[in-house]
Image (cartoon, rainbow, N blue to C red; front, side):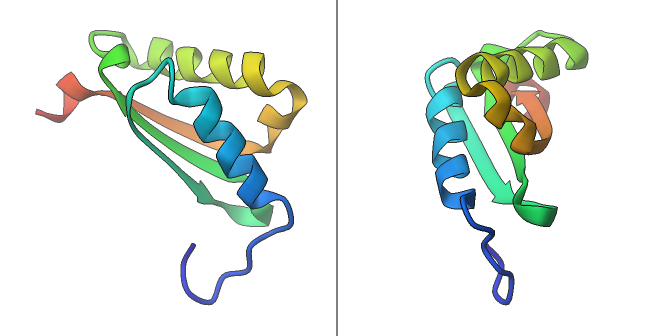
Amino acid sequence: MRAGTKEWRGFSTLKKDVEKALEPPFPGVIEVTQGHGGYANVLVVSTALNKLPEQQQQAAVWRVLHDQLGEKAQRVSYVIAYGTDELR
């Protein structure tokens, strides 16, 4: 969290839940930051996303979030997803 920003009630729990949901299927980098209104912004960089088109990368991450978090997934503002092969 950036200095001077307020942590919204429940964001710490949301962050942990998102990380717990995404770490098994997407080994690599998972960064969850607080966005506007306490919503989560999510960055995923994983070999599990290699060779998938961008829309399929996004869909894969969102599918896991919805399956694992249910309605709580609505507290995620956006997901940025990359395969490690895109960063070379």
